[in-house]
Length: 442
Image (cartoon, rainbow, N blue to C red; front, side, top):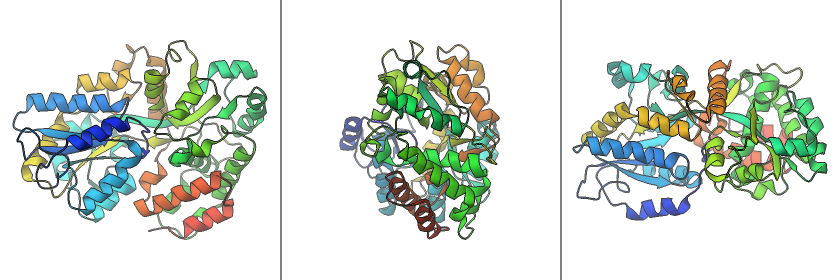
């Protein structure tokens, strides 16, 4: 998720090349405008690497070709570096005109600082733009009942992926449907020299996905709602302590690949462990399908990839249809951009998710956040997975946003730090809760 915080992507070289090529464009775009003498081009930063970068670039190229008077200059930046660079640029008053992000807590921090424009009236005047998108996608774009971002791209629930061949080798007939079943099959994989789960633990947000689901499955959405609402000692909820305890039980049971804390998500090494048969399963965002399709050879084509929803926890209060992840991605307009740059950004928003872009996301295993997108899925060779993602997203009783996106940036950093320590068994569940209670509301 930076990360993606959720799209763990690579291509650092491409990012470096993009940064080196950038010149100065105008107010609010000191690092992303300019070439070709257009000093008022709208800067646009987004994540580099497959599968998203070429699709985002294509959308800009089509727009630039059709709008000679409104040009966009892009910079592609590697996932884990993106947030830090954006934070620095905002602090220096030199952010891009178009700010790519995940909504939620990060967006709220921009709103509180007056760094992004209120788009509520614009959406009111452009109802057709809003009405064609998933209603759920506007949740993370809305702060205090006002819309500050344009939802875009794809819906990305977190799902369980598994290697069917690894299951056969271990003699495991089917994916686990409950937490008890999940714990019971760990020895079968380990005995065959196959790690039960792949995990890019160095990136930290990958570990977080486990907690998101366990908190939800055990205690329901109310547990984190109390945290978001600033309730004192909310992390001490018995369901939270239970989830934290179960997480460390999974670590101690050798549930994850050896050395997981040194594996990065940006390298896509976690996906590689799955399709190379070194690990049997992986909990990750649905965008992983596109990465595996691009980098995993014939793994998907040969029918070796399976998928299922996170198991239920016996006695848990949470609805087993609940999911977590990204209800969309988001584009905001930098408040210090010039009026021409803002005009360009809004015009660009109306061009997003055209048929070409939708087909692009579908070809990479993504589900566009467009109401009628399902009609386009049937013709895809990836229709089985895409329909699974569509159903998980549309049938979820609750679609929670990734914690490090829903929380403020400062609280999110404390969270990620403590998650790493939890998985490395450096803090107890109670110590984790105490550390997190100290930053509630900050």
